[in-house]
Length: 275
Image 1 (cartoon, rainbow, N blue to C red):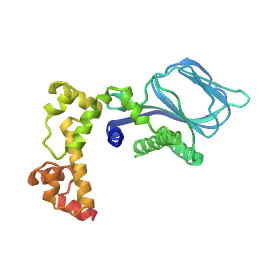
Image 2 (cartoon, rainbow, N blue to C red):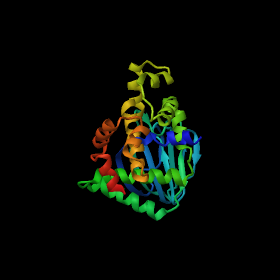
Image 3 (tube, rainbow, N blue to C red):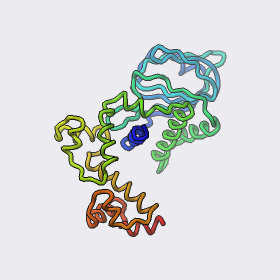
C-alpha cells in the first residue's frame, strides 16, 4: 500500500497548467447560465451570497468561504439569487499530466470549506492582479498561485485519494507495476525490454507510451530516480561515494559524470554543499 501511494505521488512530475482567465466578480450577471460543458476547468472561491450549481446532474449549494473545482467537459448549470447574488473569485485553467487531463469529465464537483479563507482570498487576489497587470515573472507567480489554491481545495476537502482515483481513471494505472519495479530495482541493470514486458508491449511501442504518460522516456526516468537516491545518500549518510554508486547500479566514473551532468556538481562537491 505504501508503495502504491509513493508511486502515485510521483505522477505530477509531468503536470502542466495554464491559466486562461482570472477575475473577481460580484452581482447577478455572469453566474446564471444554462447547461454547458466548457473545455476548461473552473476554480472558484465563494466570498458571499447564495445559489447552486448542477454538475453532471448533481446539485450543490456552495456557500461563503467555500472553494470548488468544476472539471472541464462536465455538464454544468449555475444559479444564484438576484437578492443575494454570489461574490466570487474564479479562474479558468487547463491542467494535464502528460497527455491526460488532471480532472476527468465524468468526475464530481470538488468542493470544500476553506480552512483559512483570508489566505485563499489573498492568494486569489494576487492571481487576479498578476493576470491583468502582468510583470516579468507573472507567469511563474500565476502558476504558484494556482498550484497553491488547487492543493488547498483538495487538502481542505479531504480528497486524499485524488491521485489514486486519477490512476484508476487513466491508462496510467497500467504503469504502476513498471514504476514499482523501477523504484525497487534501481541498484540493478535496467533494460527497456524487461520494462516493456511488464505491460506486455513491444519496446518500440513502450517507449512512446511511457513518455506520453510520464513526460520523459523510461531510461531518463530511471536515471532521474537514481540521481534522487544518490542525492539523499550524499546528504544524509557518510557512505563512501563508491558505495553509493554501487547502490544505484552504476560504475563510479560513470556515476560521477552523470551526477555532475544532473546537478552541475561532482558528488564530492554536492556533499560538501549539503553537509
